[in-house]
Length: 302
Ligand SMILES: [Fe+2]
Image (cartoon, rainbow, N blue to C red; front, top):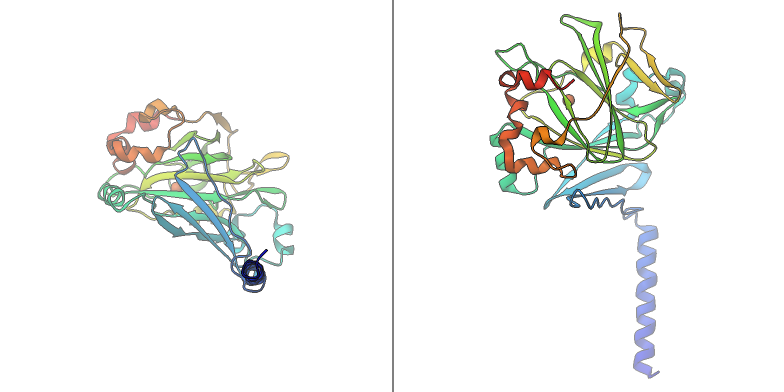
């Protein structure tokens, strides 16, 4: 080896050492990334978990050409709805992340204009496979308000992108939030669609042992109603390792009806197609913003 080459090799090695040192000393993302490439859903999004100092986490999602930072639900946000009180009281770090919401996604500015003009929103939620003590991890749960000038509330549609989900849907009597009229559970795997019809509060449970990633289309003109489910310490059932148990704070809770996901044909989608593609057939989503015009379809889904 010539002298010049030897020198270059030494400089290169030193550079590598410096880079390694930088990675170790500067907390430049203890880690980079959980990359989600879901081929049959056309690898349309990438999830990055950047772990910084002191366990604080910035989780971002790249969707189309835009990067969105997660809205994080922390463990303390779950306080009112956790079944296993003993576990919760003993958990010191209640500031730890529970799950991640990426709201108002669009692959391009022109897609976003279309979505906004149609009063819609496309979100992705990521729920790691943690336990809340003896209970499977879940979303806090909420209802949707009524469409102004009608007595029908906004529906919502979900699609599982990765992992599998257990959707718990519950309907209570008007004006009596603890009197349960109907409880439906729908298990959904990758690609499956679940429609939450008007009037149903909903909780998504990840009982799968792997990270759940799911998308939803919903009307963008309202805020969800969280209080009734929080006041009653959760939904009408909890899903524990041993199965579903009733929440004693509800009255007349019927047995769970187990139903299947929505047929893809109902929305004109192929069975492996991402529901984001409905952006190209946006009129198919009008039932989300004007459910009063689609009552036959919406009452027939459960
Ligand atoms: Fe919802």
